[in-house]
Length: 308
Image (tube, rainbow, N blue to C red; front, top):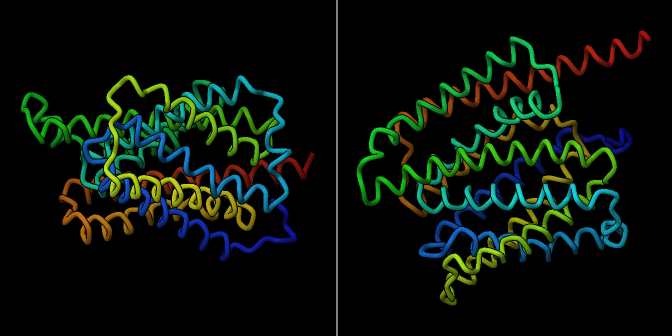
């Protein structure tokens, strides 16, 4: 990060605003995506997000250079994993109460720790493994009531499948983060954002044979709005890291449950259950501990590098 423009408060505000926009996007998808396949919803989200993303890159003078890549195959891999993660996540949004789908999505940082250790050889010691285990206990607190109705049918079974889909999405998103960590070695942020938006739009088109329908005008407007809002949210999320370190803004990820609870209650009459509240508190606590531990380790690494 360029220290000449460091402004942690601005970075935090952009992070929180991006989360609010992402939750609004999810609300638009939840309302507009009724009866529409997750693949079709993913297309609307990805294709129309290109409008603000490309406008942003053009404004920064990065649109032309954004298409230059040294690792096209890496972008394709990231796109395939990412579009599958989005599709599974949107399925969960369409079939679960909004606060619950958000809470289960918090499993992603836990999965990222595991994926980093398995695929990147990152050293994960007892503190972080303990936090991961505690976090998964929180996940089970949320999911367990759903697991007891796996043999039932109707709406309850759809919600159970939605919970499973969100956990699959979190796992795939963690794998996508591993791919991003590899891409940043040769690619700039503009290139990664642009190629993901493009690849997600293209790959989601491949789901046309699996039940696409012509949305009503009202649904189309909501889904187009979801894509535009999602694109702006992505821009704000990218910008926040220009003004503050990742470790500074990362804990504010958990403010999304506040926005999700408010929007879920106001527009969908959804109230979090006691298991969701307790499980979310456990997962958030574990996630914040992992963030704190990462920050401490980074400080130690910087001190060691200065001593060498």
